[in-house]
Image 1: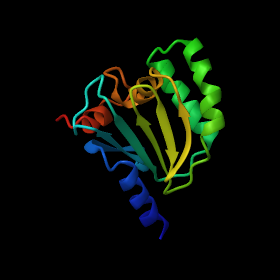
Image 2 (image 1 turned 60 degrees about the vertical axis):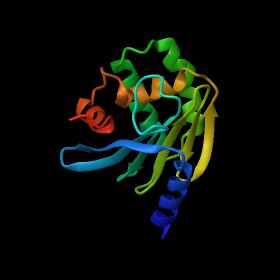
Image 3 (image 1 turned 90 degrees about the vertical axis):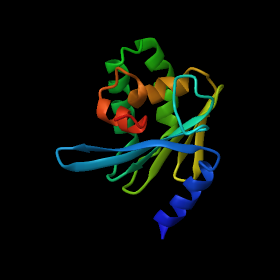
Amino acid sequence: MLPLIVFFALASLLSNLNKVGEAEFSVMFLDIYDIALYSDTGTYHQGTEQYALTIEYHRNVSATRLLDLTQDQWQHLEVPESTITQYAPVLQDMWPDIEKGDSLTIKVSPDSSQFYHNETVIGAIEDARFGKLFTDIWLSPDTSAPRIRRDLLGQD
């Protein structure tokens, strides 16, 4: 019954947004997560007023592992170390361990970003730069996952 509850909660959370695209992330035939991008207009371009990324996990992932992977991707994107060290402790305190079937959503507004674990707000970062910094992991032209980027943006 829980997945149904999570689905309805996410539907409510994203009710004012329209799906732009979705993708599945797999490694060596193992499905890791599904990811979807939503925006206020149903399209995404840098500077979109409000958007969200929702990740639904097919595996258990510890909060420590999530943070390590996030930092690895920021390093790939050449985010300055000082910026990484600014946000890493905040994310470490905010993110829970993820269990199979859980979702993690970031909802980005012009001045802040809110994280949700399933249907529950787990924290916010009141910094206009953070939302783009985090979502660039998948949306930057320099992402390490160009196929996922294309699928999220609805490009062929």
